[in-house]
Amino acid sequence: MALVIGVVSQKGGVGKSTVARLTACNYAVSEWTVKIADMDLSQGTCTNWNRRRLQNEIRPMVSVEQFVNVSDALKHGDRYDLIVFDGAPHSTSKTLDIAKASDLVVLPTGVSLDDLEPTIKLAHELKKNGVPAKKIAIALSRIGNSDAELAEGMEYVRASGYHLLDGVLFEKTAVRRASDEGKCATETGFKSINEKADVLVQAIVNRVEEVK
Image (tube, rainbow, N blue to C red):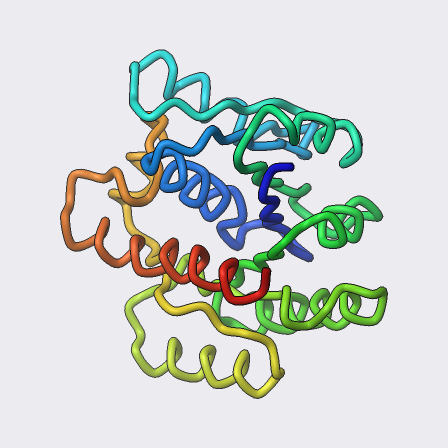
């Protein structure tokens, strides 16, 4: 059965699809067969991104498919090494289904209270509904240039008691432009940006190993 990583959020605009694509691509680099289950039927962000990736012949290849139900996506578990769920851009009843099915559930968030408060609220709801706290990990994403704001955001997550993943995704034009070409955040044209994103994805890999 495939390893399952869920990437979910309480609200849109926190880098959820960016984290899902980053995770999928970097497992694929290690020759894992990977499926992204795109649960956002209205926008299909990962589906559209993968079309651009295929058009530009970018390797490694990552399979992306839209699904209505979590159970339908899991039926592919015997054909892939990893399934990455890219949840809807807001919390739905399927968010809990994704979290319960996942070996690790990643909640991306910015560092403003507008992002942090609903993220931790979602983590509490998942825990309340039977998802072990150790399987919930917070990823800091779409980070600006303020070191003080970043430090405050990190402290907020740590105070919540949930696992804060090492590394962050910075809000960079290069990351957006890479996405426009069907690339992930470690495939930009800038080594320093790729290295910083790689810290986060390696933290996801490490956390999966710790909680399995």
